[in-house]
Length: 258
Image 1 (cartoon, rainbow, N blue to C red):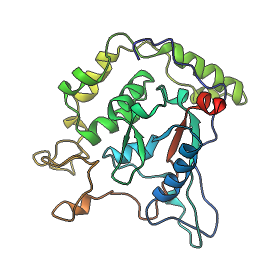
Image 2 (image 1 turned 135 degrees about the horizontal axis):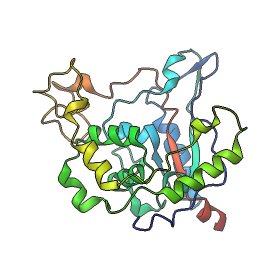
Image 3 (image 1 turned 180 degrees about the vertical axis):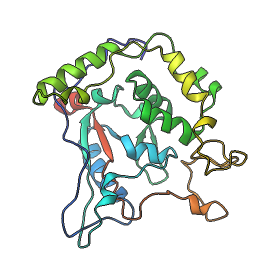
Image 4 (image 1 turned 120 degrees about the horizontal axis):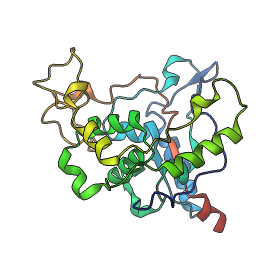
């Protein structure tokens, strides 16, 4: 991650992740985690390393994200939506040493790897949620992040070239492109971590909450939560959420060699 110019970008765009569902669909009671595990097991059995990122990872790291498909409750077939994207789109190397496993055995991008990728790609929405979900401190970055220099402008430019080559040129197609301004990584990180309290809304008593997602004294959200005083906070997501944003990152280069 020290060399911002070394990360390639996929030459195409993966299919859109906003999925509206079909009439008659119902959603798995576990949010699709078993379906995701089945897909991951199949890929790993073929020698293809993969992990979960996107909203699936943000939920694992303690955020209160809700999938868009919550807007489309229905009632007969069980479905889950899993999107495969190359690891270059996520700006990290897809190898098992960069993964951590949940208590259900699902592989996720390791916290430090995930945070660095969101910072390097200037994905502020997800990065802010990650910081608040894990209640990351200013000191956490010392052993976990590379903050020298700027976000990866070269990666962003290649990404935008791929976007422009993949969609019709319209007055609004530029809105699909990503940031190419060379924002400083250190300034960006410190600004996000230093403003956790300001993101807590008036509906939440700041004396009891460390961030908008984490009560003070709450344990690591990656651990299984036992029923108790804070059990009402478990997941805090739509009960019919199919987890359709679960994204499996695949190292396509390695897949091509197997």
